[in-house]
Picture 1 (spheres, rainbow, N blue to C red):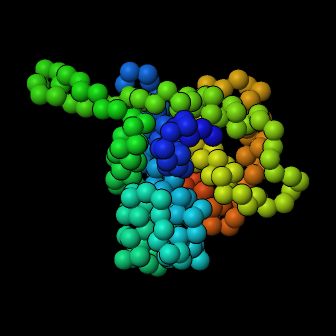
Picture 2 (spheres, helix red, strand yellow; picture 1 turned 45 degrees about the vertical axis):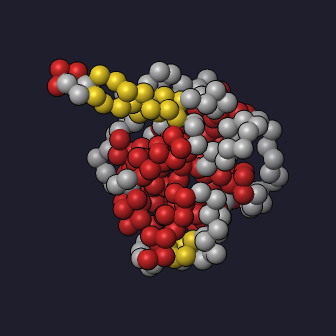
Length: 231
């Protein structure tokens, strides 16, 4: 997956990658799926980031487990909330974080200059509204990101567990895109889509238990709601 080029910016994190994949449009971003699904994926991404950094454990309740050395302020805010309210399950945290996750991830992308706010007309009501566009030319479109992930040479061997953090972040991103319905809205060549499904099926049982549990909870939250992808 791509970072933001060769400058000093932080690499894109799981929730950032999901947010960008869940939106389309060059001059003005629009969501590929219902806003509630975008929020669910962003919330899952924020939790995944803390799991990958071993800042939280899932036992099955969510509890803090690290030293609080988060690489960005948003992750620290989420971790601080979990520290203040330990013991809730993943579904509770997905629902709670989902209330503001989209806006917070979008703000992080704006602060890091990946997104830029674009003022737009408020229409007949007057006033002004806001929209966003991608301002970082180093960020690949979701179609290119997913095709690269699904077709590039595998860096993990056999059927063993996947343990490399960067690889786990890529895989978690792909699984979140699948479980929120975003993948169905991304136009991939048929052979790439088939290869992606095969790889995701092979990856899922080989990622650590907490990440697998998170993905399953996102899938269950989607399945138990009335949320449907846009057509």
